[in-house]
Length: 387
Ligand code: FEO
Image 1 (cartoon, protein in one colour):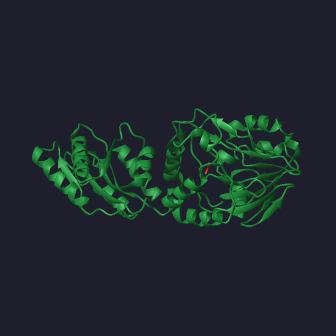
Image 2 (cartoon, rainbow, N blue to C red; image 1 turned 60 degrees about the vertical axis):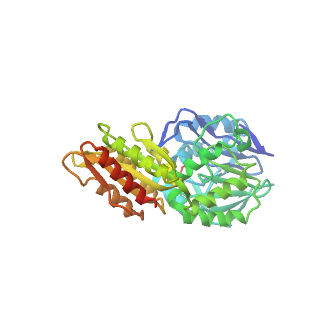
Image 3 (spheres, rainbow, N blue to C red; image 1 turned 60 degrees about the horizontal axis):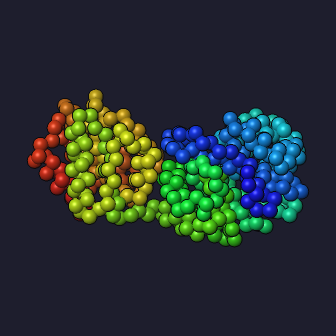
């Protein structure tokens, strides 16, 4: 627990052992950040995941008796932030819960809120709690309909909830204590959580730019205080669906090595065309790491053999995942080996064409083992994709 500004404390928890977050691999764990403002109205901003409720209560007790808490800001109802609410609100009979209308509806769908005192707020509404005042900024679809941020004017802190977060548990609190590799975590987080909502992010950035911000305190990971211009600039870049025109990704799965041979051929072709190519096997790469690679690449090739008339299951999972994330401005290419059903790659091409990807060359299906001549032809086709 840390006093991040006078009378404003972190009371959230660290989840060091979390390794999966609804499909997102979290090898560094995560945190559920919660903040306590000690003022005339003691205010709690956001909660934690249900299994950590006792730890949150213990942290709050370090500064205040829970029954003395008068306001609870619920910036987002997803259960990693609201799971503790039923139990903590039962200890806070005087607390008013502040959330947007969509938040109230979501709370109603998650919990029995009969005895909760909920006050709905919207962008621009202000709550005075003594020396501090809180202004609410709705952030619909960044990344849920109820998402909201809360700005504390005295210390100029934006409690941004999921936005600007990173899935990383650490014993340090601030960006500058962690170092530049924080951006690697922020990038993967953006690609896997926020990517579909670029337009909404742009809108929220517009609101945020009107504020004088000294600190961005998200609900996951480290607090931004030294690298705010950099992370805001990166969000602006990512939300515009920008990409690195030199980056390419070749991702594949393989049964007996034929598709792997083809993947290496495509990677070599693109590399010789001057691209920086990342080669990922789905036997070792998690789909959320592939999504992270995908975010910055312009050209992405998918290789899968046929199995029972379908692509391999891990590739199927990846394509479902990427279709949902809706990466834009991408140029794709498909290849793979088959035994007796040649057109399984159509599933990949169709799924991604439906979300706007371009496939300038038809997929290349190779029966059983590719010969040297087959690989030469694949090389030429792959070159045509990026010409
Ligand atoms: Fe961190 Fe959308 O929950």
